[in-house]
Amino acid sequence: KNQVEQSPQSLIILEGKNCTLQCNYTVSPFSNLRWYKQDTGRGPVSLTIMTFSENTKSNGRYTATLDADTKQSSLHITASQLSDSASYICVVSGWMDSSYKLIFGSGTRLLVRP
Amino acid sequence: EPEVTQTPSHQVTQMGQEVILRCVPISNHLYFYWYRQILGQKVEFLVSFYNNEISEKSEIFDDQFSVERPDGSNFTLKIRSTKLEDSAMYFCASSEGVSNQPQHFGDGTRLSIL
Image 1 (spheres, rainbow over the protein chains, first blue to last red):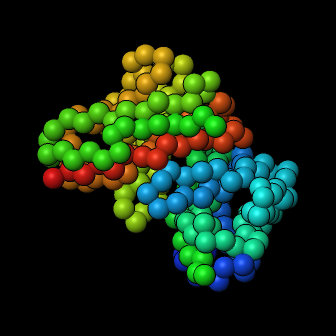
Image 2: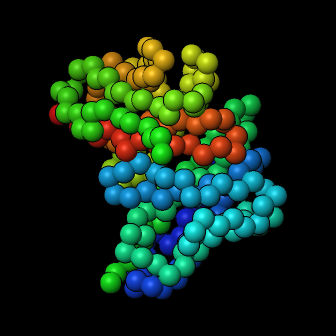
């Protein structure tokens, strides 16, 4: 079954600290892996997209890594800011049953405290 | 930066009534999507639309749902006879391409069925 599992479910860190969010997936065949940030009451905003051949991709203080062999990805946030408080969603896509599908994880809810 | 806009931001409707959710995708995008997110749950794919026809739909997108691109700018989702379980946030998204292209989401319409 094609699934995307994220951990932890929620995380609290102090402003200025770093953190790493995890995503494991069983989606096959795999096309790309996306990380989205979703502020409360807003739509998801794309942070990174990685294909199977990419190991790492950065977007400012956000760095995503991908290990296509172990089917794991992580999102590292450096020097966290209060505005980083949001849900972070891992989305894996691929061609399944002759159609292109996006499988969403349940997200990690991050709270950054002053 | 161009963005996807959705109206209304909040819609309250009596059970059994028809509702139309509206979206204006980014103007040069060719692919359009509807997703829903029940409170506290993950984002779920409903339907994708390309070249004036549905390209993919999920099992959630049954006969009570329909989509339309009535003119060159709007993209609508109609729910014919709403049920209590249709209460959710509905997100519209658009993208330039289908694979390896970010999907740009609107901020959603909160649909409340009474």
